[in-house]
Amino acid sequence: MARASTVLFASLLLMVMAGTECTETNLVPEFPPGVTLENHSQYNLWMHALRKQNSQTPRSDVTSPLTLLDLDYGLMMNLVPQDSPHPLYADTALRAEFLKDYMLDEAVNADDPRMTQPDGLTVKNLNGKDIIFKKNADGKITANDIEVVKVEDLGDGLNSYIISRFLFDHRQRVQDALEKLRRESPSRPFGRPSPGIVPPQ
Image 1: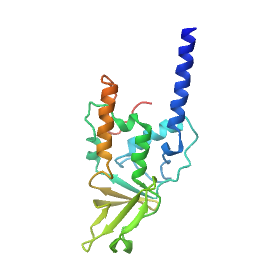
Image 2: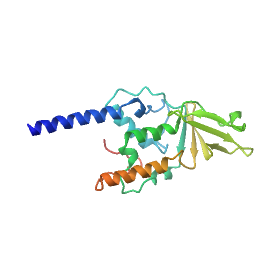
Image 3: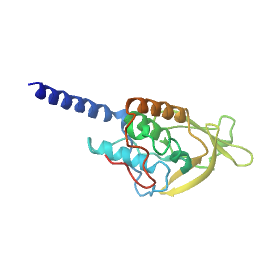
Image 4: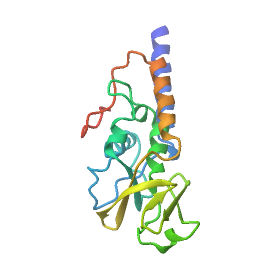
């Protein structure tokens, strides 16, 4: 009887966890059609999120981004130590918020004259937060006062703005989540995936 109760409790717990992972807030959009994103620094994380959510729900109907903010690959690779559990792969809500903060629901043209205005060009990301693009007299672009080091045309009208550091408080939040993971799972073997490898489901 005790064993049956334990199994029932475990099953209910898994159902609750699955429901939590699949809330609309935690869903990320599918890859934009006709675009290759393997060189995008968040490609592995985005792929992992899609594999997790599509194993539990139909394909997401969240709007695909029309502009991407990207990070230098080294920033993503060194966000946590190699031998540590990775919060962005362990925490569904944090992962979804992180990814969607770098996805914009409007096409942003680097030549848009509104960037040169004092207030700049304000665009919402997929979490509804403001991203403000500005361009100075030398043609240098910033996004929320962070330097844009490169603008890439990914094809099919999709642009990527590579920025020099993380948006908002992402680095600190990931570090806080990492410390929590270490306290809760000190011997957990799963750490950051190697380049080009999506972690196991």
